[in-house]
Length: 289
Image (cartoon, rainbow, N blue to C red; front, side, top):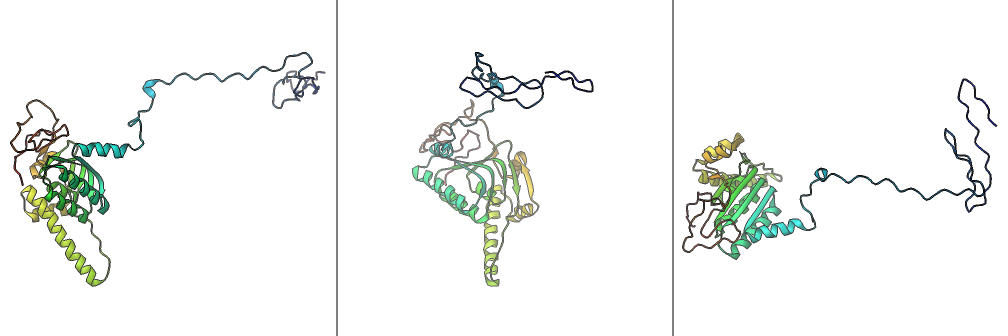
């Protein structure tokens, strides 16, 4: 039966009454919601067909696929650093505390035990605690092979003392150097504070003395620049004497140096036999400690 609706609404049939069906599924009742609803399945009427699969999504454009820097990240930092060590390259970055300084010293001493070939110390965005920097500087003083420091990013505070302890110092084009005083805090009794203050004074004298020795400047001058947090870009750092030059591309024609008698060959694919400066930068002086 059809009943007209008021207020000019269109005619709409009432939902049919549920009728039991002979199939394996009970006859469905009325479906909720607006609009006409399907009626019950009558005898002899085929049941609903199989569910339709969802439409296949189009393949993603390869140009829009996110980049993957490392395809197999399982254990890649360890294997990468091992490969660098095999080529006598040591990487250090971040904040150098006591534990990190111990690991860095262990790597340098391991390479020193393997031979006297050149070592490259990659310093990237490095800051350091004062005691940790001094411990690395002490190891660099006894390493037999020539060590070249290659600085990139921001190098500040006591980390500059590590650079000063290296025989050769190069800077990548993006390097920034900040001469600043280290942060030192004390805690304890009055006697202990006086002793710690004296120790900090000795360590600061050693730090600024080494930087002054490497740059050819007075220690008081370096200390005054550190109080002002002086910022040096690569050309300014070269003029200041903090670095010896800009890092150059390796393997370019005209940059190779002839082998020298008594020098060990570097096996990292970078420095050649007798080349104390990886990269062929042309600033090597050939001196030996």
